[in-house]
Length: 360
Image 1 (cartoon, rainbow, N blue to C red):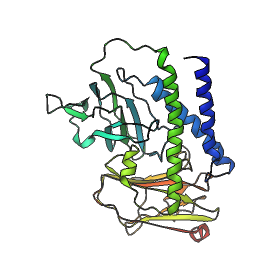
Image 2 (cartoon, rainbow, N blue to C red):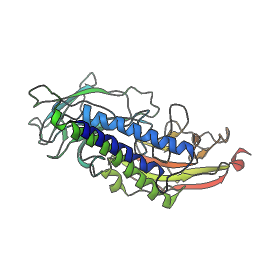
Image 3 (cartoon, rainbow, N blue to C red):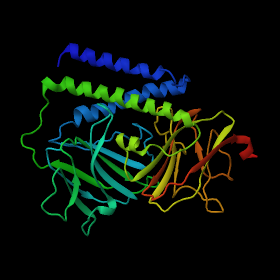
């Protein structure tokens, strides 16, 4: 690593900012400020994954989606964790199961820092997990099946290089699982290698440009059905790291100051859970710490006929509409309706009306 390589890293990071004022991006002050903040958040995530947690011999869990790092319509009901691994090595995950509704660990190959194609390797979910009497568990992560066929096994492929943990909590009050991971083939302790540190920095900035570029393309694509929630190309969602047990309805919303978006699933199928969220243009979930920006099957209030009516609006439409989701000062952004472990995916009706029609 030398001064020239550092300057190249800084220059590439500077160029990443061109996306924020590119064609199609909103030009209001809030969206632009959030866009530049988004890049700083992606850089934090990129450094964590590409520098601090990049040695598959000594894996550590980190998160690419938190309260203050948000990617691709991240789910406010989820606790996410990520980890760098290698399909050529074997791992043991040990922990204690918590109180979450849905838990999954999936191996992937690829990342937003390269092609954006995150090819699935294997997955193990909470309904497949064998627990001991105290709620503890062990998971073998490997490309070849363990000799003990009763063991919890998370398959990899030879090119697997990362894994994603999802823990779904209906109200983010449940106690998530606690666990750690270790490589079973590690030998000598890790040490920073000067000759490849510049490559780690390059990968971090590739993560910034790759992630922001992918989801900029997505939100522009979703403008073809603004204020609607059609079923997405599920293969596209899985390719970008989505979960095969989740059916996705990603889209784009836009509302004038005096408008509201009404969302009504045609029916609620048998499923583990469903949820809906509102995001900004950069496909970051709006700040769920302070605003009501997501609802699910536990937090939403059913209508008298058992159906559900969700309302996205700049202001609370009143007690008659308890399922209000705030725009948190935005005029447009992304949105996503999910069905989790459902066998059917009913259409989701939407319409835009004047907010005054509701408040009156």
